Image (cartoon, rainbow, N blue to C red; front, side, top):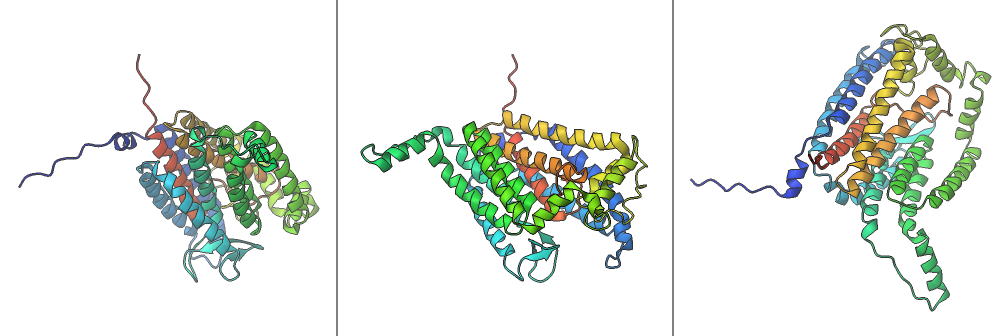
Length: 405
């Protein structure tokens, strides 16, 4: 039998098979490894004393399984030619909006602590996930796919014979008409997220979208005006939303209710302060012994500092900083504008999430209910984060090799 002739790889296929960026991959794996160790330490007491949990290893077993699944997904995503994400952007955006609508439907969306942000993977039972996590990356991919063609699009011209035409030409000149589709998409997504209510999700989606718009070359004046408008709108939302007003008042003075709503913040500050320079030792935290509510989740960083000390906490922050800086380096060296904008958006999303989480636990900013990437308990969130890392690794495969002189 004659052998089937081997098909030569196209240039696109050859580029997609390049090596991933090892520094970015190793920093990700190192942070996830430290995160699993600290999550095990922080969650042991919670699981041990919880009558509804069968084993003290309940949280770490689940998180480890999700971590393994996430790494496999990250690897598979990294093998995909990232140009595929261009045509996936619109379907993913539509799907995320549909899921955000489902969240708001009674008896469909899962309500926890007064907020309806979750859907179950099964109709009746099963683990929950937040559709806003999908919406974050969907908005970034949609913005990046459209804005990457910005330099090749011709300026639209309208008739100068009518007032409407002259007005449209002025709006086109200053870039207003260009921003309309992005504003509409962002407005719909943010409206649905605010209705949950989900302030941290709102901030993260805004940050990711704004970073892509900024990196694409949108005029700085629009960010000044848009920033002022967003601050005004958030102020109004906070003022007329009791849920958010309460969090602002709690941030100003957590000691006004030390045994109630301010308890978590106060215990967090005590954990950070008691760690000292070198910490109490791995596994020796006192505040995780049912003092800090949910230490394995949003407030895991105080446990890190209490057990590993100021030095350990600083090392974790430095590792995150290196990962973020490497992400922006990859964006600067990406093969095309779509890859650069996508990397900027995902990296900014990660950077803002780390800042918000650490800012909350140190009471630098009001409590936003946001987790620490790679550390906080949450299987679906970890998988989505690793999938996002996979997208960046896919983009890194096609970075042109440096030319030797």
